[in-house]
Image (cartoon, rainbow over all chains, first blue to last red; front, top):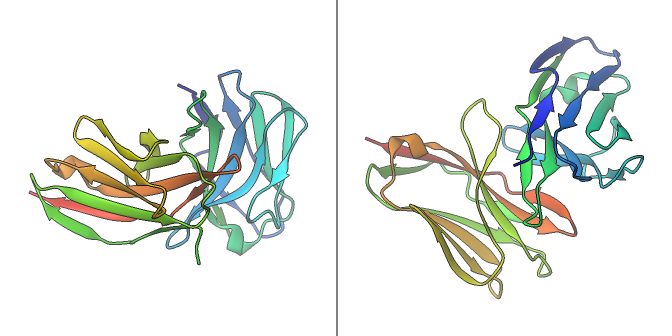
Length: 112
Length: 109
């Protein structure tokens, strides 16, 4: 199984701050994903990456960017945090041929 | 129309009963389907995946897929209080997993 590690479980930031959410996977797989999860809205895809230096927008990319400098690391960046970005952020790596995602423990971000 | 739809619940069943969770999807080209379980405060964990029409069984869990009708379901036999969680249906669309909102299941002792 893919093991996915998110560096911060809980963060509190202020409006306008730049926020980095880090994610590392321990398998040599290319595919990584960032979702946010909100009550009543489910998991929504922000960005994904199929390879180093490659990124694709998901369904809600506005206000976010990503960085994939190494295969094992996929970072989500909030350039200027806003209160509507308060959420649970989930990073995932794609498993083997079966295509399922393996999730990290999540990063709960609060923007004040 | 949402791409992947689930009843949000909560669905309440007594211990030992069969819990039936349903999911419909809009993209006829979807090829693979996944069920995840998510306990409160935890991240989703994979229960089962299914690619082919019909049933797939794994212990107390059975996934059912009907591509013609565009629905996928999850049956949990002999439900236990420890099965109480939110169940997420996910559909692979063009390499991206699109999730439903999830169905909250409560199993009463």
